[in-house]
Picture 1 (cartoon, helix red, strand yellow):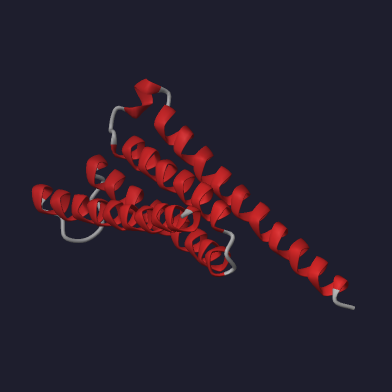
Picture 2: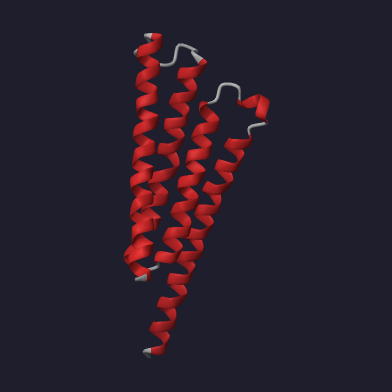
Length: 144
């Protein structure tokens, strides 16, 4: 029962990450059509922010998912769920902050919280990898 719950959380989080990716992609397309800019950003702040929100998502999520898949296939689901939930919330907050043209008035709060959660997500993944290494070494040396 516990495994089913953790796997559901993990897989639903991946689905929500995909939905967020699509939303960011569509925001770029919408802004390109709205401002009639086909290439680059032409120094349009709204378009530039939507491009950066999408690019930042692409710079952070794939590597994290790669690590999480390793943990998932080694049955370390608790680390996966904690990490991907933090990643999902972090990327959502960061993209919401970066898309806001007036975020400077809010002291970049959403972006800072989003970046922190993303980094904490990496830390949880690293702890999971270290746990896996220790567990593997323990079994190896006990079998000698």
